[in-house]
Length: 506
Image (cartoon, rainbow, N blue to C red; front, side):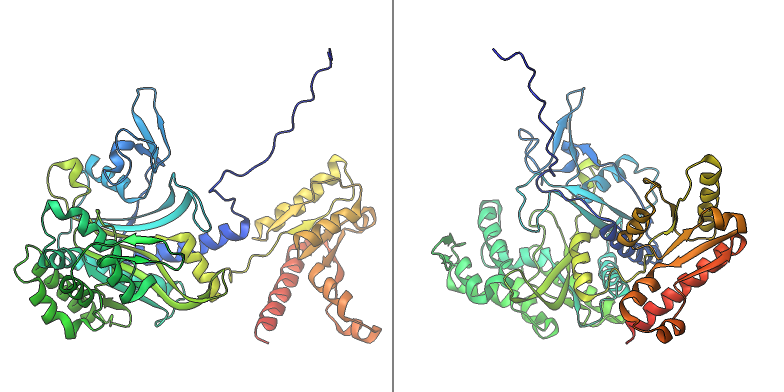
């Protein structure tokens, strides 16, 4: 029998499925983007709000898990009082809870924006994560569709503030009441037809993917894909299919509005929805937002069991290359609509609300494709090297570092093994440090420091071939009095910035 203790297994470092680490570049890109979004929202008079990551599961709404399956779709745990809590699934349900809980203190209409992570307990896949960031804006307590029109205008202004030019985006607007009116007009009204209505809406939602012919098959008997798999259709007859296809095929709303009004005439909500679309169209046009920016588009289908009126979607219309090497339209980066029933669940009285959500990660990908993100220059820190490890010397190096920081310069004192000076310069090179500060015994005795321009030094080592060129080039290392340290470093950093600017314009 072996009495030797088994060697403990080394813990394996592993990232949970569906989650990602974010690097400095990604974090800075998100900060840059959200700062621009926040500025637009503030200009529109919206105020920030932050709600916790956890909510009581029942507060997240009937659209999420069933009561007997509290972990379905969301990450949940049971508190010590046996109540179920879940990580928030979106930012809207927590807003509804906050408004209801603080209804007597909140000034209506309540205009707020929130940015934060949401969590989905779903199977992860390519580009599909269990944690991602959203940026929402909502107006609670405004019943008129002028609030929806303003949301659409704010979406357009946000995209332009991020550098997306007109012609590369479109805010598409529809109305669930019109959709419901069309379905009622073709005989799919009533609770007994709820399942068939849902199948029709899902078919409409595939318009961009399958085109009118594919949608027609899904509205009828069904559709077989390239692999031979068959998807059962909604079971409509040809007359019903033609009316649905007319509705989703409207390209010029102004030309088709009369015929659409006739189609939904006599339905309980269809006419009201058409009037609301006309009102939104008139408002945005009056404000200078033409159909090249905000367009009435009946093919927009969002939140099948969620939205109660206008719905809108922000779509980027430029082409990108997908993972298969195909040119495709980038597509949706956010959307929203009117959800008058969500706050009312807590209140027992009608509370109108409308808002939209931006998918931060997806929009960031789009901006990177356009070269609109990451342009903000981040200068790596100036490195103060360490030549002596005694307390007096360390204090001197730390004082230099703090003086640079106080002047607004990123700086760090080398914290590794200072006895191998070559490793300090290797560290500076790998880190991309622009400048190294060096002071040994000789320099200390003279009251000076050596200031090494690492960017220029690297360039010179690769480009200069003769002594004449070296003399004409910018000096890569110079000596300066300690008192002039900050001024000299600023001068070098400014010269480097000018070089980068010149190179970018070549």
